Length: 472
Image 1 (cartoon, rainbow, N blue to C red):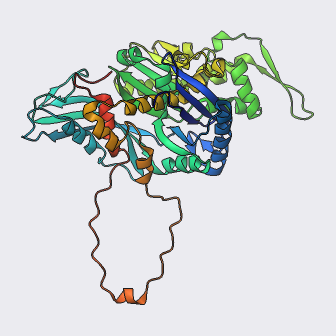
Image 2 (image 1 turned 120 degrees about the vertical axis):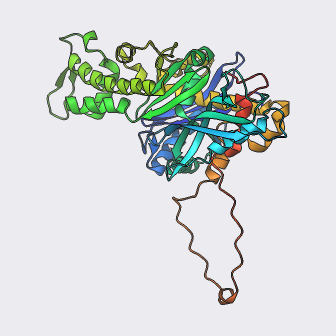
Image 3 (image 1 turned 180 degrees about the vertical axis):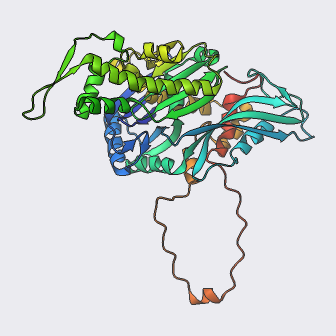
């Protein structure tokens, strides 16, 4: 699978972007084709109108396929939205007497059991991230794998991420209606982190904040492990709507003002600078003070960053983020947002640009080296790493990987396990009169329904555990 071509599809609230890429000679991702179109049918990161979204997907994918001169039939898709939830979890298993040491299957069994946790109706677990393992009451460091440790009881703390089943179905329908197959589904803040963070960031502690159009995604890393995830319902579109209502102008005009003249700090703009907005039809032009514009942007941006600060504090890692905050996404292009973030959160902040992992000879390099494309480029990186890991599995885990599939997301299993609630049920065939007289056959005992991703645990363990310890 050397140099396999991977396609990432970012279904956002304001844009749908498709990225065709592969591993370049330098080890970075080389983008071969890129397509983008306005997003239709998506609200706050959730597909609302399947037909409109499918049409937008077709246009973006078609443009990227033409530029890369390849046929596209499967994609890695990002998932976000207000339906994404996270919570801590804890589990334990007893080690069988015949196991002299804790074995791989014991850890697999422990993680597997978390997928059977009680959830709210309509939710499915999409991620289970081990935080710390405990053997016979003795906590292990993040550098020590439980595999190979002597013990009778294995416990672990987990960070669990769930999604709404119906929203997962809507993504599937939109992608399928566009004539595509889903190769994998990735939580968007995880994809964005792939593009703008490195190992030193994750090890030292960092909060990755992706400010998109409909949602702001937060992912907190420490000791090389993802510790906290959250999706906030406020983002760039909220700022645009505030400008539209506050200045009584069209939405397109508000978006243009935000990008060209907006600032997150009122103190950074002149008192007397005025912007003239053309009037509609015969109306006179409308004049707006830049300071007024900055005041509107500051109020909403401050509210978003205050919620980010709350999520960081809620995670318990607010004093452990040596690498501070990394802002990315379209909202990170706002002027002075870095300075406002540092004022509001009292944490060092930088703007995350995906050029660090991008080959310079990629198509549209100057355009793609922009925070708004972090998720799409991260999806390609994620797909490349999964493809390479499956092509070169550890010898001892080769059989397990082949049977249970890749780490993270296995879309075939994911959607196969879902009840197809949105499709009308077929009418039952009329019964034969003879059948009614016959005694009903005893029903076979149903096996417990597996979680969406419990077939991916073996691959996940390949990624997390090694003989020496947990990989950073």
